[in-house]
Image (cartoon, rainbow, N blue to C red; front, side, top):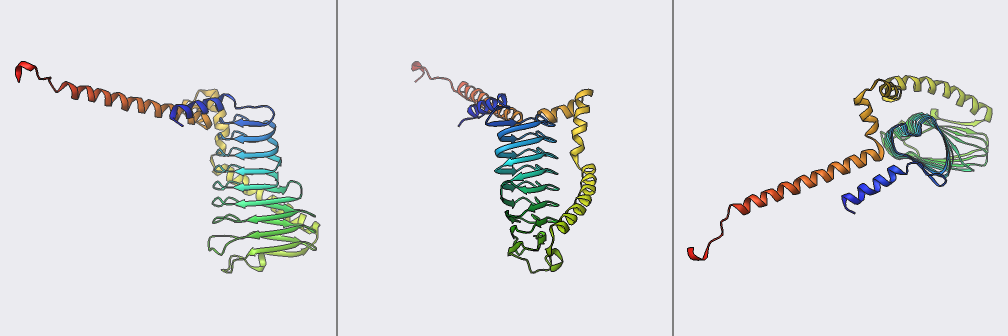
Length: 302
């Protein structure tokens, strides 16, 4: 596929950002923010493109952009992907499977099963930091802590009658979850580190559901305080700044908002095509100048 074809594809996707029915594409900054999205597949590619939204999906939700699904509610999805930096930051998610690839992709989020199954894969660096995972009676839930810090400060609430398992490698930088298990729940670990990071103090067994609820409520209070503190120290506040910039004609911030998602792809493609044309033109001129240096020999001069 040549550069022009890529540009045409990007332009087509850009012009069809919102598709009713099967799929919804939110490619620009804040494009679908503060909205209600009901679709089979939701693609949130731009900066805060689906932030503060309610997303109901029967199949896939892909939070690819920076803070793309920040502080949203995702429900009904058979698969949720948090690919972007802080892609699902502080989000409440109900899904059958969630893949967290971005840095701190699902920090401060809470995850519950869709149906009776939940698989959590924390492959991004510190992708599951301060995450809460809930598994209820009749549910089967697994957590793969994946990369370093994947389950740092992650709390796993395994209620009575649930089947819970988790996996964390024997790595000094890999933290295993803190686990609260109900009286009749089955909690097993594929691997438990033996380097002192995991101890009996991080596994609480034989609890009633009410006791687990109380632990979860206390945790939420602490998480909320940390989340508010984190918001002040992060660039999340740029969301409000961007609105002010649009009203005050701040060109620099406007450009950051425009230069995102497929708009960014199209601009980069156009720049690439322009660069190739310029190189071709300069090469052509050079060949012409080289050709002018040689004078044809006439027959009478031999």
